Image 1 (tube, rainbow, N blue to C red):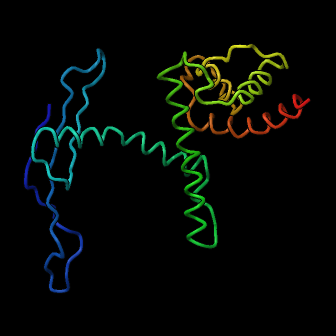
Image 2: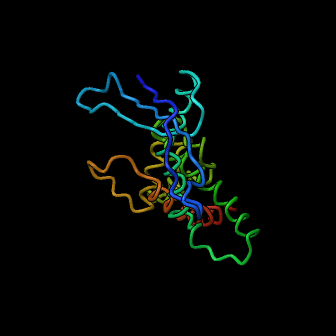
Length: 202
C-alpha cells in the first residue's frame, strides 16, 4: 500500500543577497508499507521524496520500482570504484577518462550480472557467461587436472570456483560469493586462460 502527500515544499539552503530564497523545490512524498512481509521479517517501510510529478497510482508504482533498484545501482558503482579502480585513475584528459570509464562500465556490468545470474539461475550452463577455454582453465586449476568434463559445469559451480580464486573461503555461513571476490577471481582467471591456451595449442 502507499500514500501520497502532495504539494510539499522544501526550503532552499541557498538565499539571495536580500535574504529571499533563491528557489523553492516542490516535492511529493510517497509512503510505502509492505502489507504481507515474509514470516519473521519486519515489513518494509519507505518514505520517499521525489521532484517527479505523481499524477496517479501508475506513476507512484513506477517511481517505487525505480527506487527498488537503488541497492543494485549502488553495487554497480561500488564495482566501478573499488573493483575496477575508476576513482583513482589519473588520466591527463577528460576524453581519456571517458574512454576508460566506458570500458570499465562494461566490465562492471558483466561482473554484476554474473554475480546475480548465478543466484537466479544456478543450474544454467556456465557457458552463458564463460568461454569454453575459460571454464576449462578454471576447472583444470581448481581440480589440478588437464582432463576436463565434456559437459560444462553449472553457472553456480563456476562462479564459486571463480570466487575461490579470489580468496572466497566458502565456509558455512559465508553465504554466496560477492562481487569483490568474483572480481579478483576473474582477474586471476585471465592468466590461467593464457597458460591453458599455451598448453593446449598443439
